[in-house]
Length: 354
Ligand SMILES: [Zn+2]
Image (cartoon, rainbow, N blue to C red; front, side, top):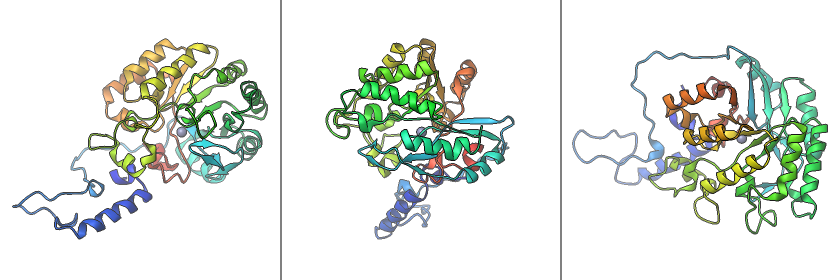
């Protein structure tokens, strides 16, 4: 059984926890290895050291393999070799796992196919399609991404629409939008004012996807807690405390509500384009809001990637949501081979068993 701490963190953060415990040994409060005495004051316990063991004695059903073959719509097998201030700037790909090692897990779990969303563009995309999709037909599908390197060129809107056509010819099965759009891409690419999600310069790109009948997998915003102060009331305190750069609180970042509103304008303006709104419509904390949007936008579907924590804490509401929208919810995990920095999404057997 995976412990809460392994689940939340992974190796990097555990090293941080060890440092913390080292510091507490010199304090006069005692350490985690010293249980609290029956009398006296309660001993402070650093949050990073808290690893409660469940006392529940209840039957568990361990599912090792999907009953029916599944497609994971949301994985990251490759990444851009170069990025600056959150903007990926290179077509060239870095690969996180070989097809052979991925196929072993896929076959064990009855995973028919993995969709690699971050396939890049130009030569990088061609390379990824050759190494995965063409080498193992039906097991891997690759999506393209916008080329933000060219964003400052005056004819960017048309260039980007043409790039989608070219990517499609080269084997891309959809377009992926990272949260770069709305939170990182700026007028001078890595500096200047933030570019808005509904910026008209992207209209030809959305339309090209509609025309070619390829879906847009879009990640907008992030968990709501990332937009709030990293304090003792924040439900993702440990994560944000370990990765301060994940916080969008303050600075010049728009609010979560503004990001979603601008995203919705894109859906309304491009009814012929299909949008897969990742991470439970980017608002797993509020399934009522996601339901309203699904009712309002017939060109919208969602996936469930990396939001098991949100869905699991509202089991009855989540169940109703799944039953009502069962043909518009895609299976996705955000699986990242060797992605130890993102403990919720490390590609392995356990990820799929959960
Ligand atoms: Zn992802």
